[in-house]
Image (cartoon, rainbow, N blue to C red):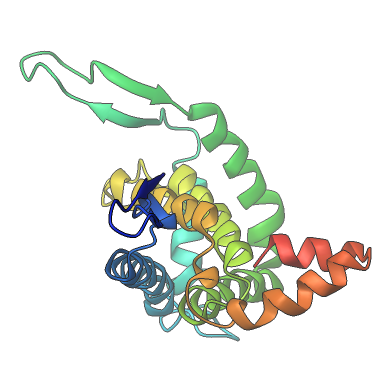
Length: 222
């Protein structure tokens, strides 16, 4: 939108709304908020690296107890239990939840994956889990391939949500909120507002304009 200045006849730009605001204050607030959310998500995964450090991943007794193995065993043990997400107990006197999304089928599939892929290969699959979370931490905190890091966080958070949300000692919304925040970061691509992606994107745009498929793909993930 533009407005004509009656004194000089010049057109003045009106401040735009949302993330494209032309106001410096609005842009600053937006960048700070995105940076806090992105770094916060990265720091969350950072805190989870140290109780499952390779090569044992916190496991004991020949990878049968403790550490990462404990949570893998728990996912396997409760895979056959009924599981629902987004439970809302609207009427307290009624047993059960009036609103919920059943995901028992997904929990069972996750159990099959745990029993047949993760548990038998924990000595090397643990590196996949640890490395993924380390990459999410670096990506979100440094703004480095931030959309790819957010995608990894969506995958990791979704697996945890499906596998552990119905565990007796867990709160389902702790995992749901991880997924929701990761989805928001995937859409926003926080590295475009701060971090290393701001340096990478101009170079990747040049590659993309030259017809490089790799350049286009990498540009999408920054």
